[in-house]
Every structure is written in structure tokens, then in C-alpha cells.
Amino acid sequence: MPIMEVKILPLGTKTASVSEYVVNAVKVLNKNDIKYELTSMGTIIEADSVECLFDVAKQMHKAALSQINRVVTFIELDERIDKELTIEGKLKSAQEKLMV
Amino acid sequence: MPIMEVKILPLGTKTASVSEYVVNAVKVLNKNDIKYELTSMGTIIEADSVECLFDVAKQMHKAALSQINRVVTFIELDERIDKELTIEGKLKSAQEKLMV
Amino acid sequence: MPIMEVKILPLGTKTASVSEYVVNAVKVLNKNDIKYELTSMGTIIEADSVECLFDVAKQMHKAALSQINRVVTFIELDERIDKELTIEGKLKSAQEKLMV
Amino acid sequence: MPIMEVKILPLGTKTASVSEYVVNAVKVLNKNDIKYELTSMGTIIEADSVECLFDVAKQMHKAALSQINRVVTFIELDERIDKELTIEGKLKSAQEKLMV
Image 1: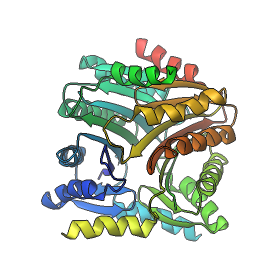
Image 2 (image 1 turned 135 degrees about the vertical axis):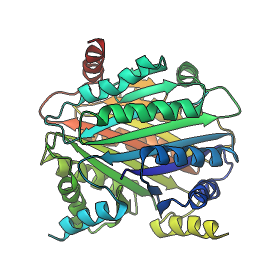
Image 3 (image 1 turned 90 degrees about the vertical axis):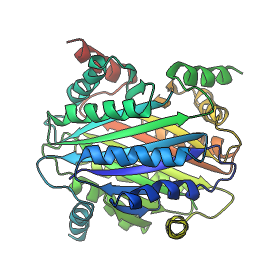
């Protein structure tokens, strides 16, 4: 399963607080019933296919852009074909090695 | 016009040189007749729509993944609706202000 | 307080699994007694100053590079001067707006 | 030689145009007599050491933050120890393979 992180940065928002724009983008995931994790630096999303991930990333970008004149969206897509990738699995693998 | 930068990072390659994977991804752009600029840190792409940009980003990612078991792709999408964005225009705007 | 996210990508690792390199970098944070949160896509770090954050980012990069010939490190630094930024505060602000 | 790309994103600016902030950050490089290339999506910097690169990145971030309440700075650091990395060398290597 591919995993994607999306970071929404609205430009020209007048104040330095931008979470209302980010939240509008994240609501897209609730509507699409997509598995995600919100962190302080972005939104990590897990889905069955890259097509699905790119589709929700596009919707998130457009949701933010419906509120403001300019949006810069950063996306990181991690996909491997030799092994299943999941949000929990990746994190657990690192945490276990940290314990040693 | 939206602008996108794509960075392809193949993981688990035998050597530290990865340009052959990057190049396979960039060839997708030639096939699709898309306007792009290759830099030492990524590929900057200009297209009429976000749909088109996401479509070629997906193709680039998949082209790299056809050669190796894992690919991490970083994407930055810059779109504004109050003004036309172009690769040349953005660069020129910064260069002119640098001169002052 | 500034917040930083660090993503370590070792290139040329022979296998697609790279968490052992990431973990070596994260151990730097334990040694420095720095507040951080590990996610499935990176490490989010909070510190009193940008100087401290850049210093640990450099140490993390070098720790990974001590094991492998090439490392690409992605860093995102978020700093604002009108308001305190914390990992918990940023996340809570977004989560509360999501509830509405 | 390590290479770094820096992207400066000021948040809370009055308009969607942000190049004046970016330019103030880039002027730091002129003052420090650092080799760099301006692209439409960021600034690519080459220096003898990671220490030097982190130092100018910090100065660039602070230069932008002196004009606005919040700045998000994205940094990508590429370093390999088995071979010299240069802006021209990396680009040429990809361009040559594209020709084939």
C-alpha cells in the first residue's frame, strides 16, 4: 500500500495562522472515508492505490484554493512493491529498532 | 497556470548514483510533450491544469518504480488564481527584484 | 518556539528497507535530550531556537552518512514570532477546527 | 561537495506575491559570496561543507523572518562521500543519460 504525506501552505492569508485552510483540505479525507493521521506538520494518508492518493491530494489542494488566491502543496509519496507499507507498520519498524 | 516540481528518489539501488532512474521518469515528459526544466535538484513542470500535472507526476513515479522496488517521490505544486504562473515569469520576477 | 521536521533518505542501501539508517539519526535526538515525535514519514522536533534545531539536523544527517555513501535529508522549519509554536499546540489547533 | 536547495515560504503576507521575501533571503548568498542558482521553485546552493550550507540556510530563513511574522523554510541537503557532487555535474549526468 502506498503512503502519502500532504502539506498545504496557503499564501497571502493576511494572518500567520493558516489552520483553517488546512482543515478544509483535511475534511476532504473525511468525506472520502480515507484513512489518515494528522500531525503537527502535515497529513499522512494511506490508501490502496497511488491513483486514489493523487486524487485526494488534488481534492485537498483545490479545497484550500477555494478559500484563497494561492496555495503551495507539498506531497511525499512512498511506495514499495516488495512489501506492504502501512502508517502503523512503518512507524513500528522504526520504534522497534530505536529500542535496541 | 500551475507549476509543479517533482523529485524522484529510488531506494535500495545498488550504488549511490540514481540518475538513471530519474531519467526514466523524465522521459515520460518528453513522450507527453510537456514543458519542463531539469535542474540539479528536480524537474520543474508547467501545464495548463493541475489534472495534467498530477497525471504526469503519477506516470513519472510509476516509470521509476518499474525499475526498482521502492520509490519516494516529492512533489511541490504551486497554483494561484489571481495571476498567471509560468516557470519563466516566476524566475524573472525574483531576478528583477534581486537587481534592485 | 520553532518546529522542524526531518526526513532522512539514504541512497544506495541495496535493500529497500531504510529504517536502520533513520533510527541511527533519531538516536542523536535521544542523546541531545531533544523533544521529538516520530511519525511514519519523518521526525518532528521542537526546540528553543533555530540554532539548536539546525545543529541536531546536521548531527542527524551526519549520523546517517556515517553508515552509507549518500544521504538526502529533507528539512521543514516552521517559525513564527507573533505566537508560540509547539508540536501539541499546532496539532490541537487543527483538530479543534476539524471538529466544528 | 554537498548541495542544498532552499525554499522560503512566508505566511501571512498581504498578497499572494512573495518574491520580495525570497529575494531578501537570496541576497544573503550574495553577501556571503556563495555559489548558487536561482530557479522558479527555489535556490540551489553549493558549498564546501554542510556546516557552511546550514549556516547560510539559517541566515536566509532569518532574513525572511525579519520582514514577516511567520516563515516556513524547506531544505533539501544532498551529500555523498564516494564522489564529488556539484550543481553542474549532477545536471550534466542527467542530461547526458536523457540523450541516449
